[in-house]
Image (cartoon, rainbow, N blue to C red):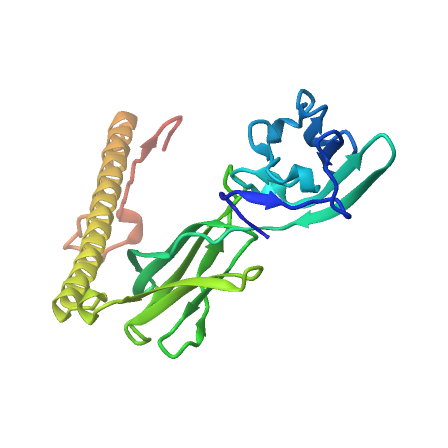
Length: 292
């Protein structure tokens, strides 16, 4: 087991213990030529070393006379995780041994921050970095009961380690104290932070704010009604003006056509009874193209 960012020594030795000073010792991954480190002819031969291990490996020779040929890898990364093979070869025999390396990262302590107001409560965010493998994130109340998070992301950084960001809404009606716990399941270790939010920080609705809100709503309604009546009045004036214009046009047309109405009234002969034949009622109406 290796901790991300630290150095790890991969042990390997001959049994029975004989000197490996004049042997070839090859450390490689899945393929024979996937070279992690090569010792041959009494010196390191790393011209064909895998690029990701260049400058990061050291062949430990302190106990090579007793058959110990351990390899140190500096600044372990998640990509270093997996199988390694330690290969021996002399003029008379060869052998290899298999070793599996696991990498774990115990990240930073959770940082809990207040991000603002949301849904009648306070939005809290828990952040941490440097975890491997992907950790578990839990919000808990003071009694240790888990709380449901609002959102959660676990991106991997350029170094292959996981970052965590989890948010939750803390309301005044719920517990004002909560903790954020991040757990590495491989190491069976965790880090935790706790925060308490005092009551005055929670949003409250003021009666004055309610009254102001109602006043604003009523004002907007009255403004809307006034605008509607003003528009209706303008439309009515426009219709009246249209009717008056049509009336003037009609009178102008009547005058142009020369329409006259002549009424002749009869005179009653006082010496005799009125005779309908003596009564003349003439009506003369002149219209375009017709005279009667």
